[in-house]
Amino acid sequence: IFFILLENILINYMTKVNNFNPIIYEKQNNVYKSHLLKARIYKVASIINLFAICILTSSMLIAITSATSSLAAGFLLVGFTIPFFGVFYNNFNIKANKHFQKANLYKKVISELNELKKKPKSEIEKILKKLRVKNISLEHSLPILAHFNAWEKIKIDSLEAIENLKKIDSDELEVSEEIQKQVHNIYEKEILFSKLKQAECINILNHIEDKRKVEDVCTIINYGFSKRTTSILNNKDIYLIFKKKIKDEKENRKISFSEIDSSNVHDISKLIFIH
Picture 1 (cartoon, rainbow, N blue to C red):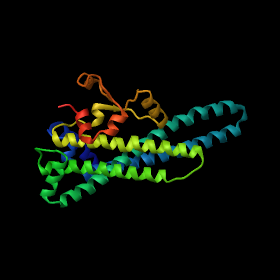
Picture 2: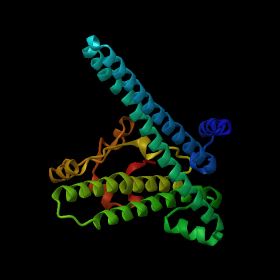
Picture 3: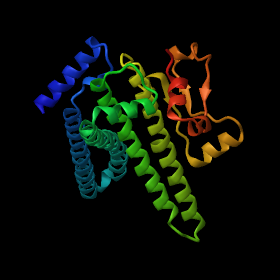
Picture 4: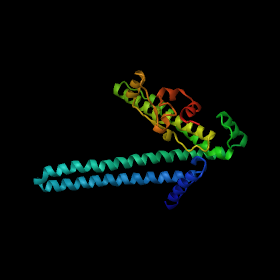
């Protein structure tokens, strides 16, 4: 734990003093272990919190039943206390899932980086040419390409999950609607987001000194299936909103779901990142 924390401090320090994007010099194994450790800590914390809720509730109910005169006050106290602990339980779970997702990403990055290191120089040059990348050393390009390929794997996994959902055959309207909602959520939150992160990688490959992430430039607006469909039909569709400091440069432009969906990662990169 100490070494992982130390590594995080060093990465933050290097981000400030180094001229390159942190993806280039980060230690992928340590980042993976760090996120996995944090995920497990938050998961344990959520379980402890759940036990605390159960014990507290049981204790209060026992106290209430043994003192019927304070029945109303007891139930009122339970009603206020459980939601309070429930908020912590929910937050711990959200943070655990976030770090598990990051760990899963870096597991893929490590695998992709190992595969790239096995390839001859000529093959890496072909990959960079295909991605329209110039003026970057092979050493610097490998970790960025590993991230690009990892996001491609996530896209493929998400498309497979969608195909599996579509195979579910049901005559129940409610089931069909639920499947449609799940398909949309995967597409919007996984596939389109992966395209944005690949566009970010393209930007880094062409501008290794740029430390910005998509999230630094834009706010992503995720809608459910019904709201997204309605917004598209009413020509009020918004998927990306540029942050305040970027708005003037982009003339306060907003980007739609359809625009990102129909654009390739190179066009998305140019659309989002200004140079």
